[in-house]
Length: 527
Image 1 (tube, rainbow, N blue to C red):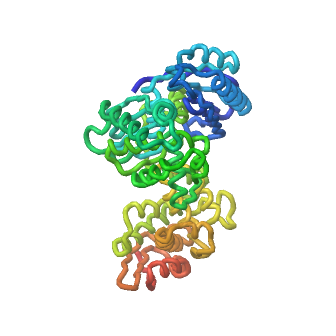
Image 2: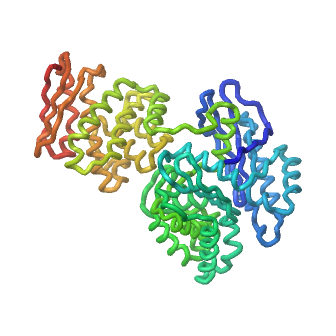
Image 3: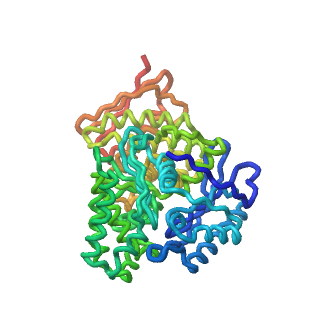
């Protein structure tokens, strides 16, 4: 991939303790500014994420020029973002412009006017550089080692497509198939006529095939970024009746996109304004973006779309951190467990106790998994819940199980979808005190199947937590088996295990009801 040289425009000094960086992405449809605070280890947290829908590419297909109105909207947005950056004492590490500015006949005039009005030096980057930035963000947010996957960042003017296996990119291309461009060129009726949609599909399909998209083996999934993708995630989430706080890492099936497309293609622009999950500012261009997504999934022969809500602007931050030597240029393979431990340590958790609970919980899981249809992925969710169950202490001991729930729900946990994060949060919520009840909003919002899962995994976690009641790892090992309606649990250790035996009895209530069994716990001295 190409090496991207970032602009060094500075609007304010970095903070004394930590580095604050701002990055701006000037797209065909919107301008985004992300401001983060980075520590010397290369970790960062988002302080601000400003967005302005300026439609810089409006009419560009027909005239070849950025219009005066679009130019003024862009300058107004960039002035505001520059002031926010100064206010937060952030160094503007990168300001890049993509498809619209790249092909505009008056691009030099636009760049000069922005410089005069804001002091910002804009770098116009190529489609390949866009793809590089989007791919950086993918590897920062998704565990893709050993997988062949597709990546698509759909902007207003172009789409950047990558086919890769792990960190090795096979294909990197940029095509003029952005949502604004395709809408202006093909969709003139309201709603779009069948003939217009047919021509649009044909154009997209030919462009993808001509560039080798779909050649070779199928990909495991398509990872999508950009406004089209995040709106797809929001609409599907609303359609499912789910209420996660973000669509980041949300998983969508191809069949759901097809159903949404069938519905959207019949609606007028005015009717689309009321579709749950759809940003009204994208109601006029969403159809073209979704048709492109549909065709990408058909050509790549994948049934799963995974949403990356970060994309290019996060890639700019990562590239800036690389430039400063805060993170390696070659991204390291990331593991979900490392992410969990990093988050737990930031909450100052009791690592020895939580690790002990996780170890015991996995042993209990193995004894009941086969008979209850529990999978290896469920085991990972259980381990994550075990490691994080007590992080609510960071806020207060009182109601710490509820604090744990909220901390996990709002955490950025690498490798976990919003659904998985919700399950983990519920496991932590029910490791103590009341058992799951329909009167609890967090539990009642789950599907019936997920409620059963939370009760079973939560029962295992609660029982394992009871086995380290003294928090001194007295239980060196356990043996357990489920026989008909009896779960036999034998505790091993060299010291008195009466408190741990009491913990098994007192905290085994959810386990007994979830698995419909009697719990028989005994102790034996370690041999």
